[in-house]
Length: 350
Image 1 (cartoon, rainbow, N blue to C red):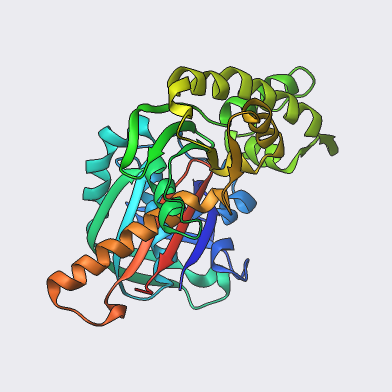
Image 2 (image 1 turned 45 degrees about the vertical axis):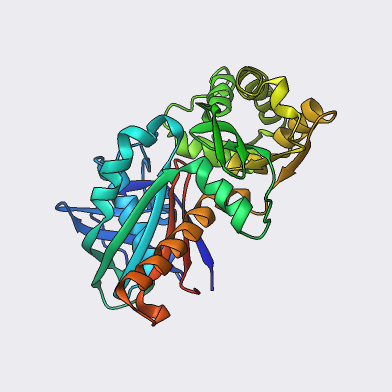
């Protein structure tokens, strides 16, 4: 059975004791004793933190990457000992320099201390898990695997556009693999959020807000400033159109040639930015005469689901090599450490 979990990719060093502040695990994540420090993570950091944050496109050597990664795997274990087969990934821009360090960090044995008092339980619990197999791929490849081997099952040629918080990526995918000449990375939705911030600063003092807090307001379409609700929907559409015209459309024009369109009849939109209707409208407007624009189901989960499919493939091979028959020997995990949200997809049905 496959299941996905999502929590905000934010954290804050915090030494306050919290007693029963949440009913669900994802709302009460407090990790203790990691490199001698205590942290609140995700929804709890947004609720109780003063400046919840994450570095943009952080490396596997950074504390925020490691903490969010271990928290994602803690979520996958559900608090019990597990053997995990893990696949994770990066955008094209950071894949080559980061892939080896990520594999080295995740592979092996881990222990993480979770303070369950936030959920009204007994206290700090030590959770152990082992990762005998890790693989790292690009986010685009993860989403392509989901499109080809998940519920969509498209075996033809298509263009894929991944619209994330930190990066926008485009590529032409054929059954034999990506056409790397067409693969390109550029700025993500943060580009539009920065435009929104510039507009707001003309009228309001908002320097105390982190990029992640601004992004949450951008998602909601409103923000509270001096106890007054400010509607952001009109300005959001305006900056999203600027972002599309200045970043997305030029990236596609530079990297997808007219010749590439002959054997392609659709473009798939993945990533959290695909949830903005304005973005979808602009794609439809530009490509209405040449391509069908399709937003995949739950586009914010697509990379994680593709990673999980890859982990299932690795697990089947691992079981064959070891002569194992018990399917419960491994839990397969797709871990998408996004700049906006961390998505964990878990499956042991193979």
